[in-house]
Structures are given as C-alpha cells and as structure tokens.
Length: 399
Image (cartoon, rainbow, N blue to C red):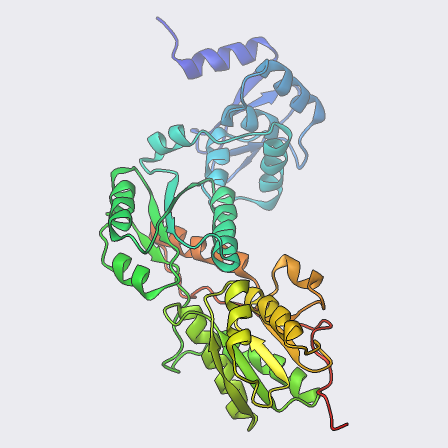
C-alpha cells in the first residue's frame, strides 16, 4: 500500500530521529525530538517547553535543503501541531502566550512565507483584497494606501491596487469590472471625492466592501478630530503669538477633506471671536497655493495664513516672498499634514501632523472584520498633532 504525502513526510522525519506526538484530542500531530517530553495542552498543542531549541531550528533548516519553509517545518521547530501554526496564521486568539511566542520565533527563524494560493484552497477564501483609489500623487491618499498595504501584509493578505482617473468614467467602470472578475476576499475603496464615492457606493463587487472615505463632518453631527482638537490647538498657538486676522487657502471643494478643513478653520475662528480676511481656493498643489496668494489683490490685514495642506503652504510662502513680505516676520504661515519636506521648508513649516498611515491600517482592519463576519463598531479616525516650527512667529506690531 502506498503512503500519502503526509505519511511519507512523517516516516522520513522518524527516520531522521523524530517521532510523532498526538495532543490530548488525538488529532493534532507535532514532531518532537527523541528524549523530549511533550506537554499536552488544550486545542491539541503538543509542546516541549517555552523555548525553541536552537538545535531543532538548525536541523529543520538543514533538512529543507533550500526549499521554502512549510507550516510543518514551523510546527517541528516550535514543538507544536501544524494545526496550531495554522490557527496562529489565521489570527486565532485562543493560543497560549508561550506557544504563540515559540511559533513567532520559528516563523522568523525559518523565514516562513505563507503560500496564499494553498491557504485559499484550504480555507475556501481568497487571501487577496482589491483596493481602488485615485490621486496617488497626493500625500494623504498615498500614505493611507501605504498603511492599508502594511495591515494587509501583516494579516497575510495581498492588496491588489487599481488606480482610476476620475475625469474618465469609462476607466472607473473598467476598474470596477476588473475587480469583480478576480477572486477577492473583499474590496477597499479609498475615495476622497464626491464623484468617486457616489460612483462606488452602489457598485456590486459581490464581496465585503469598505468605503474608506474621510467622513464629511460639515453637517456638524460628528466633527472630525481636526475640528475638535487640531485646528483649535493651531489657533491657540497663533492667537498666543498675537495674531487676530487670518487668511485661508482652501482645498478643492469636491474633496470631503477640504470641506472638513475649511469648516475646522471657520469653527476655530468663530469660537475665538476672530476675523477672516477671506478664503482663497487651491487644488492641493504648491502651484495652486502660490497662484492663489499672488492673485489676491491684498491680504486685507491678515498677519497669518492657514493653508489646508503643506504643499499649498509652500506655494503661499514663495508668493509672499515675491510680494516683498517676510515669513514669519510680516506674515506667519501654517499648513496641515506634516509632509516629510515640511521640516525643510524655508522657513521650516508649522503644521498639523495627520497620521494617514494609521487611518489606512484602521480601514483595512474594518474591512477584514467584515470579511470575517465580525462586528467593528469604531470608524477610523484622523489624529492630528500640532508641530511648531519657524514659519510662525509673533504678529508684527506698529512701528
């Protein structure tokens, strides 16, 4: 009678000095070195103590002869059943800390990489998630997607990214059809504009979907963290420097983020009894910030400019300089986002640091809960911290 692949593997391992050990439920098979007494634990885990033996790891590594590590290699090195390794990889919470630590160490030592195709066959569920997005040239959306990609990788998923051009509806429809044709566990829609949100809100992907758009808080029912904490902290800083009249360089009105930041600006002004010299409109780019400030007939007495993002703040600084004004001696400038270059502007930019990557990780976590059929009560939030640099200073006084 011929042996199956698992039986052949076990027979070969026994021939090299290993023996099989069953857990207390009889079904979990671990491979232990001779002379080591396994510990039976709930869930069929067979263990040999809290540490992964270096000799076992070396023997497993040598026995692989250059092939990729499997869950059976990890189980052997960690002294647990292959079912335990599978439960760990699937995010099962009911694994003892000591066992979890051994599995994690074995995974790292053996440089284990999950075979997503095999896992999909075994679980009946794809390990790929589709992501549809646009405007990757913008800092916020690109960092959100980066965070989602990291979270997907940590959960054992691959993120298939499709970008679209909102100016071409046919491309958007093609992207939707492309994702529908693939075997996906879910779809993450990273939308920042009304057009994309409306187009994708009713799209039938046939799998769980999470629309990762920044919530529009202009209704006032659920103000964002920028409105509640970020802009208030920024304006407290500016008022403390003696500023009372401000100019706002806003983002494109179709973006919910731009509307939220404009609302945060006006709310902070009203709460402090301050006045606005006006609102200029940009498109997030440094060029648009420059052109908006250059086109303004005058600053109407504004001693501080608050731009809706750092790129437009950069453009505003150049425009002020070309108009013969000094930053920050004549006009202070602040932005939002804290892009990597903000600390190297001339002068370095005061800004609100937004953790976009955390928003992306939270968005994927929410989608993963939907894929698994689990409840997820909390929506991802944008956290904002005030970063004070040299672009803001005391307001100019009378000569």
